[in-house]
Image 1 (cartoon, rainbow, N blue to C red):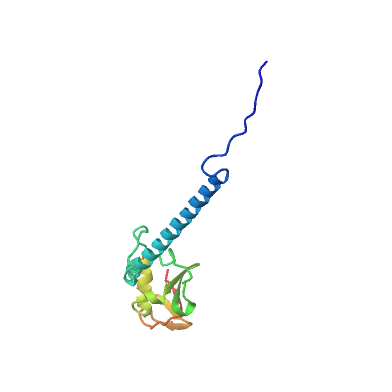
Image 2: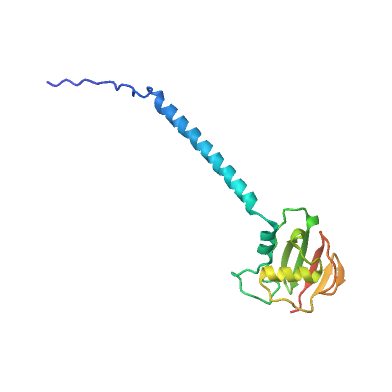
Length: 162
């Protein structure tokens, strides 16, 4: 007859049962320290990589992914700026039954005229500019398409002839 003897395993010689948990905690904290150092490094690099020149280059460069168009209502930049409404100009193009809302941050405006804003929107949206015959209103006042000085917070509505 065979006798079976159960042997209780001995704790590991590296600190007993708690040795594995302590080793895990050391690794956890080491990982957390490395993650914080990496996060701080990326944050510092990001702050140094940003410049107003790069921002203006990004905004003023026409996109290569969209085809050029003559339709002012085909594309829109209808985003709410991070600044309050006083630091942006909203331009709405009305083409028959369609509308295209374009919001331009005042910090990127190089020419504070209606023609300058429309040219900037055309460059961003890939439109062939100029398109004569726009019937525009700045805050309800009727202006010609190439005149009219804008200020932050203006809302412009332009009727595009079909």
